[in-house]
Structures are given as C-alpha cells and as structure tokens.
Image (tube, rainbow, N blue to C red; front, side, top):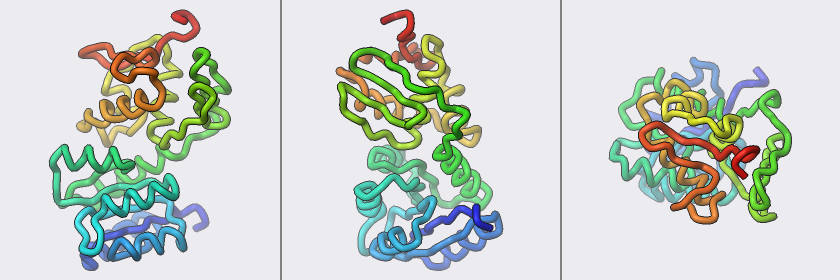
Length: 235
C-alpha cells in the first residue's frame, strides 16, 4: 500500500525490536530496524521514515544523543522508549525535541495508539487553515503557509507546538481547559498526561513572548487552563 507509514525502530535489544516490528506490521505499518545510534542515523537518511521509535539506553550512544542528532537535520517525529518513568527523564526527552515518551513495558495496542496520535498531529489538513493573522507589530501567523514570524524573523515550530498554537489562536479570547487542550492537540490517548500541556505552553512562550515569565500572548487562567489574547479586541 502506497500510504503505509514507515516506522524506524531503534533498540539494541534485537528480540524486542523484532516483536515491535511484528506487531506494527500487523497494524499496517512498514517497519525498519536499527540496533544502535550509528545504524539509526544511517537508516534515517536512507529510508526516510515517517516516525522514529528510539530507545534511550543503548551501548554506543544513548537515545538522547541520537535525538539531538536527529533534530539537527530535521523534524521527523520521535517517540522515546525507555524503562525509566521518572518525570525528569520525560522532560529531558521532550525538551530535546521528542514528540512523545513511552515507558517499558508497554502493550502493542498502547504503542500503536501513541504512534497514530503523533502521526495525526503532524498531518495538519488544509481545511483547518485560516490564512494570515497579524496579532500585533511583533507577531504574525500564517496558517496557510505554516509560518510564524516574530519581529520579522521566521520562528521554527515543531508540529506539536504549531498545532497547540493553532488551537489557542482559533479560540482567542476563550479559555481552553487542560483537558480540552490535551484532547485537541494530543488526542484522547493522553488524558492522563497533563504535564505535556505545561511543557509545550512553556516552549511556545520561549519562542513567541518578549518575556516568557510575563506573557502577553498566551495567558494562564490559574486552576483552569490557558487563553490566547483576544488580539481583535484587547490590542
């Protein structure tokens, strides 16, 4: 099938990589395997996967190092696989550019569900586009071109950051709760992952705001959620 998504599985445990491959193939994905960081970078360049499943603990270079290398050359979605479940590890992976984090052991259904959710976030359909929005003299957002300009400079947003910004701006002036944001941006699979919202709001503020600690665009409604400034009325 021409529309099958290609997944690169990177794990030094060959037995686990094979199990993941068999389950994902059963679910309709095409799968490529790599067993260390060097192989991962080679397969990334030669097979052009739609998404990378990347183990953290590997012998020659750990997954965080590989993730940094992947982000230096592109925005291919990456889901980290690890036996560690501490929030500090999750935060580190996300701050380095991972799109999601799955803790071992995981079920085939859970992994496939998370992969599909991440791929959905990257597929921004044209019917969601809303043209160019001039928020103020500093910030311009062009949804048709998927571009964000701050003080005349093009700002690079990762797909999840862009999707989050889209939903905030489309509801400018209205408060979106944490649950609403999780459902719209990440999908129902993430209903128990509220830290994603906090982290990505911070990422956006660092890229868009003059002073992220005192935001003028993405406002916090304490105990409820977040609101994008009503630029048509408030500015």
